[in-house]
Length: 444
Image (cartoon, rainbow, N blue to C red):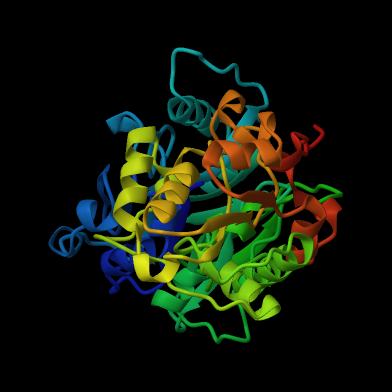
């Protein structure tokens, strides 16, 4: 996954760099490996690099940026220095581009295996620019030819911003405002809470699948560039990817995660003394599980250093180090107790084994693991961070065998039906491919 952001201020007196930085801080949970910000006033200016937003986009650096328009991105992917987004496309017009998700096919373009994915997209886009009379039509025309699961934002040198989603709507994209002077486009609504205007009962408007929002110096309008008879919203957004204070496709993430905890209690109850959630995503699961069963909830872990989403780290060493730093077990919470340990997902099983070991080392009598998602069995073609299939423990082992491998006294996933029920959308409107191995496609 990736976090993308676009800010468009109609008054050229604005300097939006700092607002872009704050917006990307709100999206930091979507990627910690690279961060970038591109602004446009009299010219394009950019700061891009490896690391978190605080590391790459320091206050002192961002304050030097001019411009009343900007694009930003945070990403969980390690890449070559020239591939740090937002990407710059050079052609008939100069265009900055940021993408969440994955373009799997571009009509009329033959992918070059010697180039990275990012360079292939830039090359295809650059070649396509020459066939249009203005940059807005060029952007719309290019993305009409793209297939996959993605959302995007572009900013061209003439001061036009175009933001849109693929026809399936796999990746989220929301629209907000900054007073009367400008618009915000971002992966999640939490950005609007941070830098814009949005009341708690009136979530930001989603850019609908197959549609684009076009900002020009004189107007803002919504257009349709592609249609599809079905939707395929990413189900993993609700389980793990999005922040709990966000709305995704109009659905409050916190409500879904509470419902997941209630359904975990219904599907696989166990007699125990205490419920503990793995920080931070699984805390709402654990709270709801505790409320549903009456089993007390405890704070089981203390964090060292800043919050790290260890599951998103690219190497096993970094993942284990992240767990060790963020999850120091509080002995008093587990000693002599039968513990229900709740987490959002289990991918390889190595970090869960480490957590169970740490709990039992601190005196836990029993550890019963409950997972707030179904077993992950397939690599995602749309850019969600899922390892190769031969590394996925849920693809190869039963729940009883996984319990044995991770050292737990019992182990159970949420059912697929339970996840669909928690989200509250028809199964036909969700992409559940990482749990089923079956992914949606758009004809054409």
